Amino acid sequence: MAQIVNSRCVLAVRNLQVSTRYYTDVLGFRKDPIDAEGWSFLTRDCFRVMLGECVDEIPAGELGNHSYYAYWNVVGVDDLFREFAAKGALITSSPTNKPWGLREFGLSTPDGHRIVCGEPIGG
Image (cartoon, rainbow, N blue to C red; front, top):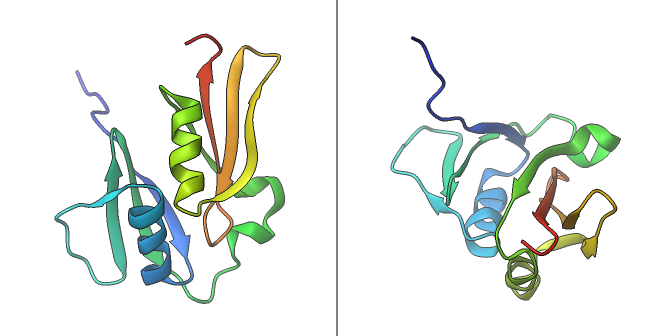
């Protein structure tokens, strides 16, 4: 039977070097051993992303709510928030208990791709 065994988000970025540094130095990703001109393949824990340099594209930050691209279910949401904040992440909201039973915070990338990190309250 066919099955999906893994996935990787694909994002257009305007400056590959800047975006790759943000993911590695600020968000704690590592570069995968894949070499392709104009691309960065990155992984942190079980989340994988491909950054492709597209200098002339509209930045995600100009797409309103279409700029959301990931919700990361995490363990230790407050610790992750402190880690990212200490490294200069582009935080959009602090950890807050939501009525749907999750504690969440938001951040964005240099191009304006938005990410929400959440964990069950009391998790």
